[in-house]
Image (cartoon, rainbow, N blue to C red; front, side, top):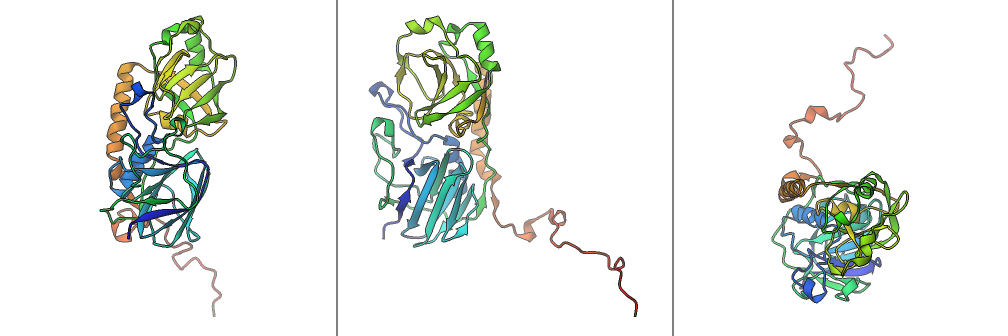
Amino acid sequence: MTRALIIHRAGPGVTVQDLGRTGYLAMGLSRGGAADRLALHEGAALLGQPVTHATLEMAGMGGVFEASADLRIALTGAPMRADIDGAALVWNASHLLPAGARLTIGAAERGVYGYLHLGGGVATPEHLGARSAHLAAGVGAPLAANDRLPVGPDTGTETGLLIDAESRFDGGTIRLVPSLQTSFFDAATLARFEATEFHRDTRGNRMGVRAVPGGEGFKTEAGLNILSEIIVPGDIQVTGDGTPFVLLSECQTTGGYPRIGSVLPADLPRVAQAPAGTRLRFRFVTLEEAVAIERQENTRRNGLRRSLCPLIRDPRDMSDLLAYQLVGGVTAGDDLDVPQT
């Protein structure tokens, strides 16, 4: 029997995603893929499988799913309330989804994009070298009730693991490097850009999000003379009204708005996962600093397996057992006011 995940109900933003497709910019197709690529690395670590396996991305809301056979699953990204047949599940962990059981995933409690990973990965047909839906380009479509997703062979057996996931759902400071057009903005404007507190706009999708400034916008006269050229995820375009727009995985491939900078890939998940209203700040780093940051992040991602721990710990493996208050209310026995007889 073919292993499959059956969709009984799906939120409007549930799609199949992987790392995306490269090599098609010249043909007008951007990379696409998961909005939060770090979540793919976390899921791969939990299941002990390649990060290239396709998964389900859930934008804001999950759904109800059933396994045709026993499946290992992992949940990463934006935390969502989840249960199997009513038994609550821990997020950022791996679990067994038994055949016939119902997995229910609700709305995001923090962040935007949650991920459901399957042992063996989603095995839908590849299009242009990837399984990712690219909605802006008309490649693939959101999942819907009665869809049946084939699941690849799973060589792993381990579940019940928890990962120490990086928190990235509260905005904060986003690091960026200068772009080819940063010099179009004068020094005073760039200083004000770094000093400004922004709020993530309610408008946004997998193409990008608006960062609304707490004051006036950012303009440059040179912006009127810019020819359209290649743009990539992370670029920050400043639109005609002076509002920065941070491009995400499904961004267009060319654009004519001036780019004030480009977000480091290591920080892009913080932008993608920022809920509406979240505070953001931007800080420029040098190219040398950016390279060092990305190398450090790559090393951390490659070592995620080492950060795993069991959901239920065996007391025999707990070197710090005495630090846990396993029984409360214990006394020496001589401090009780016991009547004498």
